Amino acid sequence: MERKHSVAESLRLYESALCCIPGGTHLFGRRAELMAHGVSPVYSDRQRGGRFWDVDGNEYVDLMMGAGAVLLGHAYPAVVSAVREQAARGTGLSVNHPLEVELAELLIEVLPCAEMVRLCKGGGEADLLAIRIARGATGRDKVAFCGYHGWHDWYLAANLADESTLNSYLMPGISPTGVPRGLAGTTIPFEFNNLDSLRAVLEANEGEMAAIIMEACRSYKPEPGFLEGVRELATRHGAVLIFDEVVTGFRLALGGAQEYFGVLPDLATYAKAISNGFALGVVVGRREVMEPARDMFISSVYWAEATGLAAGLASVRTMRQVGAAERVGELGRRFMDGLTAVIEDSSVPAACGGYAPFPFLSFRHEDAAVNQELTTLYMQEMAKRGVFAHTVNYLCVEHTGRDLEQVLEAAAESFEVMGRALDSGDVKSLLECPVRQSGFRRLV
Ligand SMILES: Cc1ncc(COP(=O)(O)O)c(C=O)c1O
Image 1 (cartoon, rainbow, N blue to C red):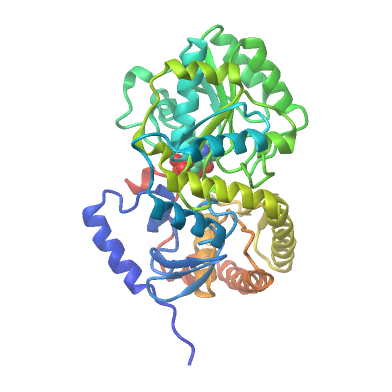
Image 2: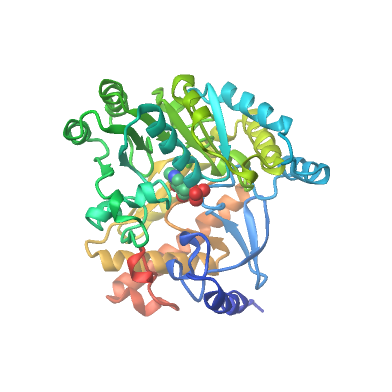
């Protein structure tokens, strides 16, 4: 008899979490209300390769892969054994650990703009370090940005003047509650693929701009000449150009977007895939910009603890050895072709685009509310068929042909359900859960 999909234990744990953890989770994107809440798994018990098993015993092909942090595969043997061996030898900390130097030298070898390296524990933190270094090195305060860059004050300050400034970047509705009002006006957005908008921001703040920080691409792609134009404007206005490579690093190419597009920033930040599921973040960059950090107070006990360093070394070496970016690119192309065929065979208005190592699915109904309903129904139907899917898809080296087949079969069936839901005139009628919430404001 077919086993009925249930996530009862996940739901029980989440109820408890809401009582003892404000917001329930430690990564906003893992909040259950953003999924098909009631059908999607909320807690994972075990992960291996391109799959995980939730606390109710359901098995899923994982298309989220730790929000893109796991590029090789969950519990990848070479990384796990490096961490295990290092843990048994101690994590260092009383004095410095030789792995710090080894990791820095390896990163200088593989990341195009890297001449010096500072370590930390995550992507937002690496961005914070990069901003501090840029401010310290230039003696200026202001930051021009586009893209998503984490949760720290310097970034959320963008929403102090107008709470919708960050709306186009990953999470609409982020409130700057708790961010000092004195930071208003220090972080200024410019539009992706619009050099005039960056030029205007730089000219209006002549001599004050410490840094331009951006993601070189995400679901959006740079038009020819755009990144080169940003590079030139940064140099002309004396601002430090920072590429946030937290998502693109090691995934788009080993060296990230700067290698892929051939445009060199002054500083770049990497996290996520750099350590395949263990905690590590880095800021790397040109010696001239990095070296002044010697005289800035940037310091924390756990940044160079040795299990993170061992994970980083093993991950970067393995990604280079197995050609991880090329392999997820190839898998991603098959995924995109398969999903595009599914979409074309269906009556659902949707498209699959972006870059092959992290393709995006978007629903294109004229009514935005229907698109949310379709996204929820897609997540619901995919979860019931053993696929943990979102609209962004992170592939890993260990996703197999069988995983891909299961994903595309599940997608074909899910799109058939969505087509029926649209035909009925009420997509909600086939939902077994509330419509997922999007953005921050509606959750708080
Ligand atoms: C481009 C980018 N920068 C920074 C971050 C923040 O990284 P972390 O969650 O490791 O602090 C993220 C996280 O999704 C990201 O996508």
